[in-house]
Amino acid sequence: EVSAKPAKDSMGMDMVPVYENEKLGGAGQPSEFVVPVERQQQIGVRYAKVERKRLRHAVRAVGLIVPDKTRNWQFVSRVDGYIQKLDVSAPGELVEKDAPLLSIYSPDLFTSEREFVELLRMRDRAKTKDARETPQRLIEATRRRLQLWNVTEQQIADLEKTKTRKASDTLTLLSPFRGVVQSVPLEQGKNVKVGDMLVEVADLSVVWVWAEFYENELPMLQVGQNINISTKSYPGEKFDGTISVINPFLDEAKRTAKVRIDIPNPDFKLRPGMYVNVELGMDMGEALTVPVSAVMPTGTRNVVFVDKGEGKLEPRIVELGSKYGDSYEVKSGLQGDERVIASANFLIDAESKVQGALRGFDEEQKPQEGVSPGSKP
Image 1 (tube, one colour):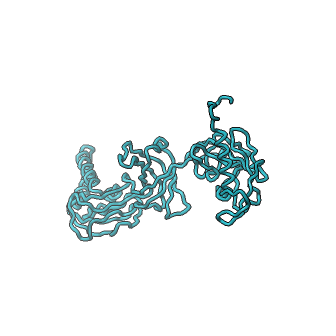
Image 2 (tube, rainbow, N blue to C red):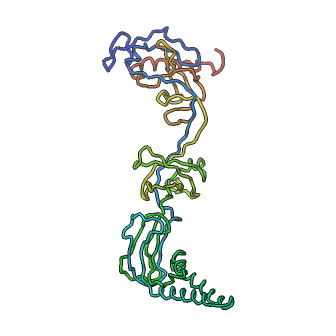
């Protein structure tokens, strides 16, 4: 707002006089103007140092946690029988390594184990090396059959012990690792056939995160790169991950590619189905910076207001680089020992002075009538 005589603005505040001798600027830059220090304090002007600091560029995305498919163990029935005992009953149950999952009664298993025990006894009774060769070959064949039926090495070793050689008609399946039951599609007493799904256990000590990144961000990503993961479930806590797969195919509609991140999860805190925030921080080196709030775009230029002391402000055109968080990289127009106005709030109250200074700069930049730019009048 402008008035030729003392007055109040539309907000009821006293307007500040502007004098001709306040224009102190030189050619090529807007003129200085004065907003008294008391007035600046009244309208809440904030200041910031032009400083050199390390810049960090962050690439962010949202991801979904899924189980590591290479760490899922599906038990499929290798024998006919029925479920004699079910040690786990529902998805989500935590099981330790070698903990029993279920037991299957199987006549076929009993027949094979009895054959295995008899062959062991036959081999032990043989008097010569040649006499032991035939039962030994049959023992190895039966051992492989038992292994295919999910009989563990320890269970086979127990059959081989001299004092305890006893065939069993029950197969007990043990968890191969500490994990979580993912599915149990059966009930105790149910008949099972070869090929039936019995139980699925997921090892969640490592989980995957699938996140989508835009195509312009993909050149910044590399397999093996470390990346930070956070989730609202654990505020303030960071999880370290590693990029393991970058899908070469883009989603044509969204212009994104899926990226897989592997995350150690020893405490099982991260659970499949969780949404997480993914952030890749990149060190961009040192540069001169100003706060984003200190910059006033004018259409074709970016202007900051340099504090010259005693209420004097100098509009300064600056060349900016990239934006990093709440700061801009300054390529030219400022020096590291200068102080700038960090808030644009005062522009509303001192609008007449700001606009007058910028208009004066525009007039200085316009070529005079009949004179080409760069020539002397």
